[in-house]
Image 1 (tube, rainbow, N blue to C red):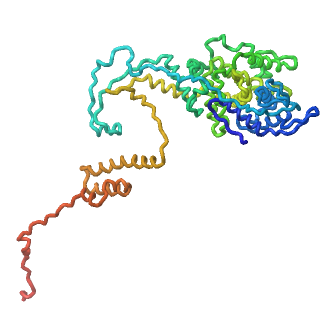
Image 2: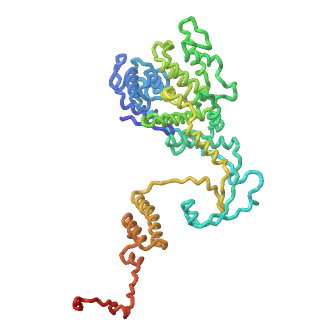
Length: 532
């Protein structure tokens, strides 16, 4: 069985769970084993299961080679708890799996999970002010507005379309946008962009939009210091000073500015343990339980190596949805993890694990985990945290393109607009247009008719133009016939129709005059015969 790429979308964790179980059941070799003078058919050792599953996860593009053997053992413990496997006596339900020689087997029943049916969140309708209604103040109705008459040629020169006379119009002063209006615009456009980056038809299955606080988005964008770190209005939610000092100590090791250089060995490990214990006792992960599904869905973009920017942008936008205190702690923690991993002067914090791997193992669960204890959340969190460490400067910064587009949209809504008489809707905000797929024949027909109509109009304009001479008209028609023979043939299907455009004029002969028949007067010339 070939592994399948599980991309972004709803229930991605469940889809990954079913995918890995199917691969494990298909790829795990089973055979006859003996235990305590008794033979057991179609079973396998625990150590063999660890080897097989570890190799399977490492070669699977949904997880990658970063998966450790210890994480594989933890996953097999969850397999035993969820009856994916059972011991040879049929016992399961506890996480007492160990990497040893105990025998296990696959149960006859299917261990695959069904997709949960989430209650429909419903689409939240964001209410905006009635832009066409003038703001409080002197009414515009009493201002006399004079219709401006303009012929088609003048209008065509200005606007490239001839529509006749310009209707009466008036200036519409829009209501002043409140802070609540601006925050809701930020929320709407941010979620719309996130949906587009993920390539989903709707966010309903991966995110309850009612749980997204529009104030948090605006605060995360504008309340930042020079380093891009969020500044909190409520100082009681800041990290304790002693935790910040401990984090700086390991990052700047061995030159600790806040703490004096210790004299005993292992001090740096005690400091690290203090940081791990503090973040480990939090009641909720930094990415929150409410946003677990959206971050797991973003992980689906990491399997597309040709478009790594999509995953970065999706994480950028998703992190804007976090509460400001969570976003700030995430910024400080991930930056510390990345810099500690690169600090060559810092002694090893573990004898058996590399520093980078230790960072991922120690802090993955406090960054991302599920409230319902999704069985693959540890592997998913490890993959997300590794990507965060590699791209934290870009991911945890404010997306400049999104910020510019929203600010331009807000500025557009605040401008004075022109409204024409009889127009019920705002002409400055055209309704959204949609496209649908058509057949090749329809496309060719539309392309032909769409291009021939303006050419036919141009040909008719040449034909009806009485200001140019006949010679110039024939020259232009000949050029047109050479360039667009099909259009020309429709207008002049036969030589007779073309000849009707230039009727031949009958030439009248001038009257014959009598004096023209007479020879002109010739003077007398002398000849030699008269000479003597």
